[in-house]
Image 1 (cartoon, rainbow, N blue to C red):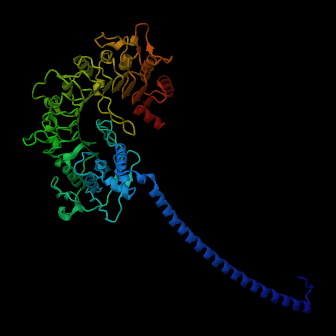
Image 2 (cartoon, rainbow, N blue to C red):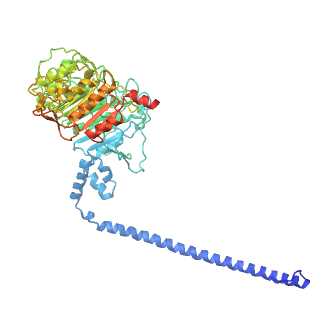
Image 3 (cartoon, rainbow, N blue to C red):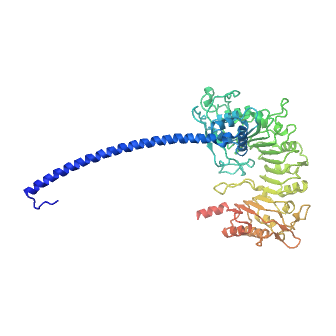
Amino acid sequence: MSFPDPPTALSLAAARAALDESVTSAASLADRIKSAQVSLAQLVAEAQAAIEDMVKEELILQEKIDHTRAYLSPIRRLPGELLRELFLWCFEGHPCCAWVLSAVCANWRHQALAIPRIWSKIRLFTNQSSSPDTIRLWLERSGPNVPLDVEIYLRVAQSPETPVAPYPRRRRHEFLTHTFVSAAPPPLFGTGPLATPGHLLVPHFTPSVTPFIVPQPTLAPHHGGWESPPPIPMFHGHPEGSGSVAGGPSNLHWGHIAVYYLVQQMHRWERFVFRFDKGFGSIAALKSITGSAPLLKEFEVSSASAVFYPTEWGWLPSSNSSATCPNPLPSLQTLTLQYAPFKPTSPIFLQPLTQLHTINIRALPGCLIPLDRILGIVNANRGTLKSLRLHFSSVSHAVLPLPPSNTLEHLEDLYIGGHHLLAQLVDTLALPLLRSLDLDFDSPREPIEETISTLFTRSQNPAIKTLVISHGGPASPGGGGFYYGYVAAGNVVSWAFLLDCGSALEVLKIGGASLEGLLGTLGAPEDHTPAPMGPGGGGGGGGWACPNLRELHLRACHVHAHSHDGVGKLVKMVDARNPASGGSAGAGAGSGTVRRLTRLELDDCVPLGGDVVSWLEGRIGVGAVVCIEPATERCAAFCM
């Protein structure tokens, strides 16, 4: 601006004129800008609408392309017979694959529903609040004739005293959904002790849990041939569920409905496994498992903890002989009863032409059965029995005298645990093919080595590869758990019997024994006085006990004096069996050699220290040494 200063009348007039002109020009320019912005917005909106129309058109075309390519795909030209064969191959590795295959497309669903076999393996990890119609739908799709393989794991969500809400009913318009369990659920059953407080009780006998696909089906109407479940029976005088029993399906309990559906198809059972972690309200539903199952090869009902049952429990393992059905289970080969009621005179044990090759029984506490009745179960299956695992916490004396010798020509695996009277049963057995022996008596009257030695001699020196004495199972997660057993191994006077009985032994598991005597016997021959060589003594090991030993597992094994005495015995034994040279151990010419140890586990035995563990790993192998410090040491370390 070039106006004189100070302003004059003439310059002020000129400035006012210039200001009016600038204001007018700015207003005009603002109007032009606003008009241009409106025009631009309109152009952008039109362009955006055009783009959206093109995107929609592209998506439609792309969907058409995808459908056309799918139609042209070679899988479309795959014959239905070959597709069915592929489904069957999937079924062999993944029993629950049918739920996935039937959800791919309409054609695959049609094919899957037309193959009853791929629906014949029921795998459920469930609880008593789930819908039992899953089982109904599964059975319905398996058809009327295909043999059934049933595995059900019931996780009891609430205690039996707590009323359980009725299972939810799904609306018909809801689609079938699947819950995929990518990893195995927490194991309800394993190889641990049964009396360990503070954590989930796990039995000895049941296999590991496998992954499952748990479908949640819609409640489609019943098709022909499927009846509605009956009214719920009374249990201890109280109805199941909540409300009136006559109130309709929503008031029925899972167990009664599920078992009802399963028992309807009992004639098709080829394998039936039902496991639960504790008692549940509708446990009385199991009483309906009666009658014959001509195809059944494996039967198991297992609880992870002791369950209360009424005195009279009439079901398949407690049934009496019947003239109308003398042989209800002609094909049964494997029987497992874990904390479940049974009668030793039931046809399930003593049926004509019985062919059981595996018997696993853990009796309920207080189940008082005479010793000769237990032996009767064994002798009834002596011609076929390969694996026998019995645990009775209560046993009464034999009513009839026990036979002096009972030869089981095919038995390879024997576990006997519980009451000390069961040792008398072992003293009558002759097992020429015995490969695995596990003894876990609560309070034996005689040293356990006498029982083992006489069994070995009576059986004509079998090649026992695994010997377990009161080893029990793992401690509680918090450490310092109570170990069941150990009395038997702690009762061992001398371990010299391993010189005669351990020639073929590869795995040795001991619990509650004295470390000095055991490790001294397993050490070099000069560390102990060899027992006289029997027919199998020494096994070519030149005085070594257990020359083929590969694994040594010790639990709660103690020392009589100072802890370093036990550690010294351990180091000396490993040094003898696994010399620094890396070869096999030996003690001079003609003395023979022994195999190197490949695994060593010590649980709650003696504190070793990091340097000793490192030395042991150097001799045995990194990762092959497992040492869990005694509870007192862990507690002291925590307090420090």
